[in-house]
Image (cartoon, rainbow, N blue to C red; front, side, top):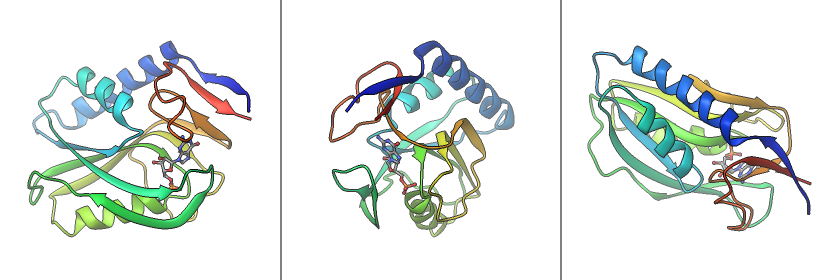
Length: 170
Ligand code: 5GP
């Protein structure tokens, strides 16, 4: 399989900075809880949070919808829950890629049950091609039509995760 450069490090960094500026302005007098969806989100999450100019708390959830291949299994299992209380809090769920939308919908539903004051969604990449669940992405980094992406936290069978740029695998 070959990898083709899609989004370079500088392009990613400047867009992440813009997202952080927008979130900082929207939550100017607040202290949101940022919840990252492990594992793919780690690089994006760290960069985004470093660029915020407001205080924020962090926590993580983990859900598995993909096996080891490049297509979604369709079933979502929740393997790690949040550890800090989110009831009555402003929560921003941060995801690497939204593909079918099944994972995000599942996690958002779980978090809603805990009664946050607000719940917004931030995703680095919105991949429309195979969307099955309608999801509203409040803060979106890039819209990509299709393809399987790796790098900047995104893996294929645990490979490519630590690359600085984002590539399309073909
Ligand atoms: P969904 O449930 O929206 O179909 O898939 C969400 C999860 O699948 C993402 O959090 C990500 O872990 C994985 N995923 C979806 N598309 C891609 C992709 O193009 N590349 C990689 N590496 N993972 C993806």
